[in-house]
Length: 195
Image (cartoon, rainbow, N blue to C red; front, side, top):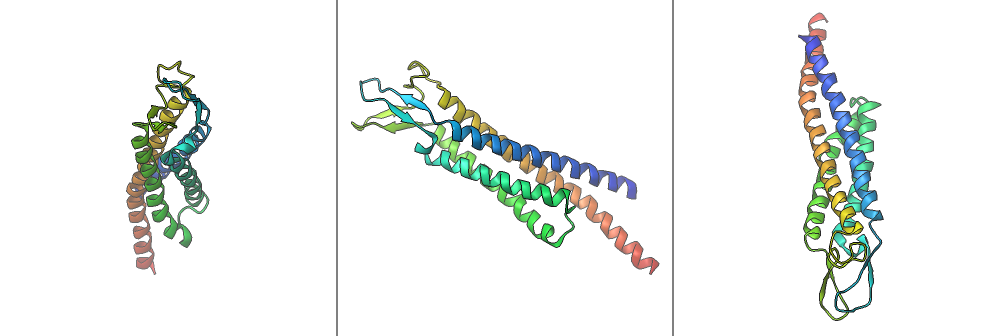
């Protein structure tokens, strides 16, 4: 039975590490894609001057770039603690639960804010009228769906995928941790009986 618990713990650790690596990669991709979504010239249908719209014109998109970057950095720390410190270091025991909560919280909050902003990507023109970024862009020929808009949408979905991957990795770590926790209890009880 001891070997089965050890195999289950190793399997859970491997899946957790893979999920963390996937989450980190998706978070980096979301941040980079959003940060590069910055060249979109919008022509107003009523003859106003063209305007270049960048991701920085929308505060939720700026938040997504910052939160995804921070989340990727924190995931790198978590991966280091799991792989090289094996989660047994005192620092790892304190930091892992904090990282397990902070990373998904950053990613989910940034994704939610960006989803809300995506539904109404528009800006106020000089004469006070709202102009849709996607419907009036030069890239789309005024028909909607510019490169800027597709990059923003893909980035938001990548951020959501990163949040889900990190959450699944944390759940698997928790499930695997309970198996390995039983393993360490059996070792301590067998050593106390032999002593």
